[in-house]
Image 1 (cartoon, helix red, strand yellow):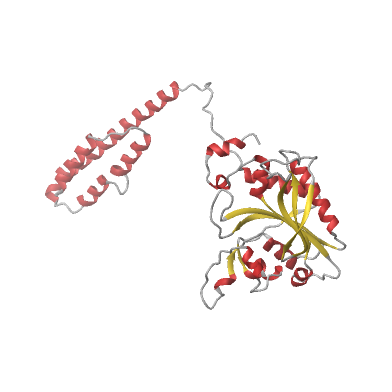
Image 2 (image 1 turned 180 degrees about the horizontal axis):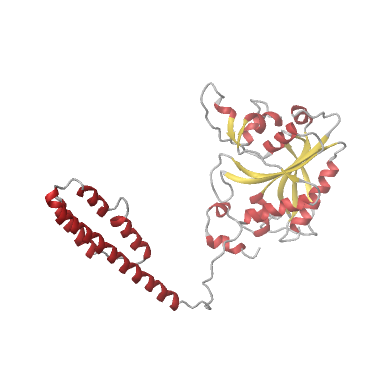
Length: 347
């Protein structure tokens, strides 16, 4: 297309320009009149026009630029007037539209309440990585490599480049006890920590189980720590969380990293311990596991078991939330259904 035809084509485009607001006007100005705009490019081409055609084409180019500037200014004024008119119509005294606020997740509410209860008696929060190594999740916790206790937790293992680390050495933590081992190997007693976090186990998802869930574990290591200390701390927690009338009982159990070990039940809050469908007629509901830290664990973490002793406990946040709010299906916690979450707005 020769220069004369290009000028005529741009003239037509300038006459047909339309803009709904100031932003669109500015975009048109840049398109036609900026340093890299279409009209400026024609002036660059004009330099190579033969002398006999320069007068005619030069006048045409100047007229095109002036027409574009006039048209841009007209649209800018029109857009400015429209904006002022819109502003005049706005009622600044009108109550603004309400903004729907979100709500805290029930698991977050319960986890924060658990942390707050234990923080009153000196526990501090410790955190660790969710992608862990076998040493901190199992090795330091008295799980020998071929020990059947490892089958108690169906673990997600992560493969890594062969030659750098064995595939089974890297995994998603199956309990937050890994945070306890990290604390014990990096700090000297006295140790009094609470370890909240998300954990993973290879389980079928159902109303009663999920492949990921949340735990809060506690650890206290010092001189002359006894099982009686553990019982009093757990009784304090149960009364603060579920009410002052709550009773507890400890049943013998087994965990590789504690000895002796126990599981703790609380009296059913629905029937007052008389027996109902919720507690399956027993009057008791299990909420956590606990025990005295095994001397082998202390020694593996570099703590002299002849000088120090300690206790540990662990609870599922989902379990406590179920008891507190009567949520029957674990899947509701991770489905992000706003109808479910709005029930906790007043909590």
